Length: 513
Image (cartoon, rainbow, N blue to C red; front, side):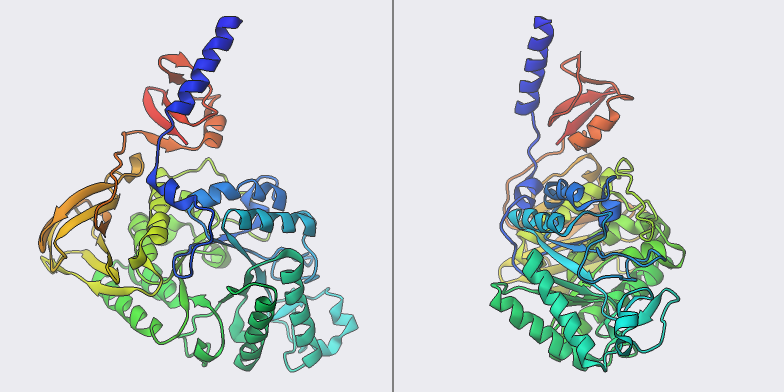
């Protein structure tokens, strides 16, 4: 027995001393709130995010979200639901779904997020309530009498009393839970004149409460004149949806058709249009609508083998990137948010997770990846190749992104680069094995070899290096799930890898973080 205890002590000591260092952790784990323009947002359905489906359980995972590089958590509607079970059919705007916990649990969740340097916004449903909402009988004049969907009743924004009550309740969430803003559901159903006054009133109130940085995310592409005729310069949202980019360009224009020339042209159009809007664009590959509504689709369904290179594009092009519930581990489930389908966290795509962690670190650490930093195309030879190359620049900071959108490996030459020292932060050829960072020197005309669907991101300047060790990186919680069916050893001795360290599993090196 003493020998066994001694062995376990040695294993514990080795696990602690052999923990792998990771430059992305050093960047992403900072507990200070990051400045606007360098943030990453995460859409979370509390009911799906953990097996318990509660605020308290999700709170325990906030440390891992911060390690992933999340700055803003957008909580899908947390309110009691109507009989149809849609979270967007609200029964009470001032309460929380009892399946998720209590208001005090939400307060604790927000406080923990703030301690980690993260912000939390609530999904606000301005257009409707559940048919069974008490307002239907208490205040019938607050409704239009129309039903956009069978289980909801549309609210009447010509009624001043209803608008005052909605504003009172929004302010109460700032007071009670210290929330940092709202994501507004489908704002084009409400008059722009309302948003002009409401957004300003919310901002003024937040300032009175010591919040100088209220987030007001609108579910609308404000450049879409057919759905929203007023640009946001005079409306007051801080962010909108780049849904034209997702729907028309990335998913249908490239993800399904693979037209690289069209992709490049539309990417430029997106930047040109965005510069006229006076707000930050939320860029995304998927969210709850793409993932579940209209039949639903996984990342692979929408983008196939291009999902990794398009993730890199979305994070490095222009705007604030969104990650939806489990997208960071591959987005391989269709999540029924009516039923709060639980995420299966064992379905982990290491390539996607390591790619996302590195991209968030880049977003946080590099000035040139600010939301609205300048974009410049780099000349690629041969021009008929499927490679996109561009730089982002802000002052002396510069990032180079090289993306092979084609299905074959290729060699290209990039012309017009800033010569000198560059650091390779993200390399598709090695990212499956873990994060790495490598110094290299470029000339103005530089040759690059790229795998099919390959992607690389370089940062101008000199940075400390980190080598991959050829291992597969997983978290300790994942290791716990695997101990029953996988044989782990450390220095030839069987162990249960519940701590960070470097182990052997079935003959293969594994880094547990």
